[in-house]
Length: 434
Image (cartoon, rainbow, N blue to C red):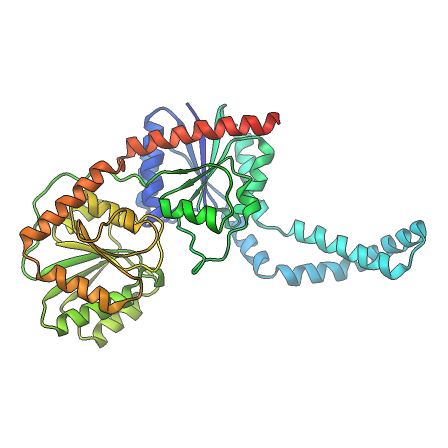
């Protein structure tokens, strides 16, 4: 059995990473492992994910709010604070420079430049606020030490708001470190990942084959990478309650990545061609007001419903009331929303990004289009909306078969994760003994 600490930046009530991490943590705990969650920012309440983890007996640790506020303040003013610190320290640095010049017999100006460089480096290290989070985690470990064998599992490139630093810092404790990349790094969309910090992980996990290729191609990863999908609990088979015009649901946060603008324009083209369709938008986010205004501008008021935040308990009914699922994202890792669509037995319209082609086979259980291609998206939605429901049901059954064959059940994902932990443990021992 392992003592597992999972690190992430936030634990939001809704989100793809959270939707994957919570069932994994619960399953690992149920199998007898000890699981703890450490989040940088204290979760807001009420929070269905906090409730789910707490009910399973999984403690959630977080940095105190004052530390988060202080680090946010310092992060935004780091360069100014370093400059101010150098000014305050200049008398001391001048004395150090003079002593160095006399001792080494060289020009004072060179010693002064060296002293300033040392001062700047020390101040930068002091103001590396991400390390403050790690020290808080260290104090939490000190109060309740991990039992051997321990595993530290870092989730996502945003974890700790400086995962390269997190991975390097964690190495000093000689705990096996596992890092999961939840996206599919793409050189056309993402900054190149720094290879050196990735080498501080004993094992990398990608959620899709596309993610693995991205870690190798632009991340420079050289250690083994395990491809482990997100866990999704199978949904009970239930008859579709969809009626009337073809109803399509998009379950996604309302943010630029998810392509909602393209979706609204595509639906407008479908309706303009005389094909009836209804669109349900499940999720909330920063683009809600803008998207509602766009829907009104496109005269889609009666055909589009903004449902807001949808809980896990609400989702099965919404999927049952829908004929298909659509997700026109610009990039993805392995969308939980599409795995849930497979589990519910729904045809899918999605963009050909990230791990989507590993879930959707064009013509078998749905349609794949290029990201940002509104005419192609409209054509796929038109084809979907004009299909009789028995054909959509056949496509949905193909989705269900893909779910059953994909190893997405929490028990299967947990077993593969534990196998990865064992590998990381062996790699860590080899590293320590080298």
